[in-house]
Amino acid sequence: MSFHNKVIWITGASSGIGKALAQELSYQNALLIISARDKNSLEMVRELCKNPKNVWIIPLDLEKHSTFSEITQRAINVFGRIDILVNNGGISQRSLAIETQISVDKKIMEINYTGTVALTKTILPHFIDNQKGQIAVTTSIVGKFGFPYRSSYSATKQALHGFFESLRSENVSHGIKISMIIPGRVKTNISVNALDKEGNAYNEMDQGQNKGKSVTKTAKIIVSKLQIEKKEILVGGSEVVMVHVRRFFPRLYYYLSSRVKPL
Image (cartoon, rainbow, N blue to C red; front, side):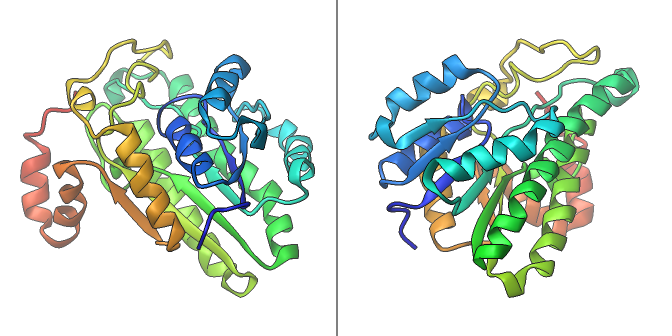
């Protein structure tokens, strides 16, 4: 599949993987709609793209579900259709479960899970009417297993797998393809922007994150796998092996996970 003239809507596009995906897809001559809360950051991303005139900005806050119907219609109206929705927006966590305020758990769930699901549901009728469409969802390797300091974040990502795997099965007859993007450690500011136990910004770069795969290389891999409509896209360093270890060698996984450095 070529992305030339495909209309692709990317959430969480102001930084990190979303920003890199926008740049990579622009070099493949896609027509882009980029969303996040910070309009100024989105404008900077647009200027970094190959064809800024083919990049449209629509600010979006994943906590404000009531705005999604109007925003989705605006997105469809930009180019007359949406071919691919990339659900990339979200927020991480760095805190022990026992110390994390329940308001923080709820906030992470509202953004990562409910916001992503609600936005998908608003565009789903458009895809069904057209009898085609592709949905990509950025989760995490902790969407496959639990990990220290990520209890709520991991829960939201595992919930996304459950929802979108069900959605895929329900919409095979409508020609809707779904790809789960499962990053390991990628060098972004996800830990810096993560929430601590009280809901404040963590404001620290994890050592593991800092040594992670380059976001540019990550975006290239993701785009190449989206082109072939791969159902699960594992990307990262050696840590992604843990997904396979958890599945095939659970006793080894439990041993290794008890010794791994979480930050």
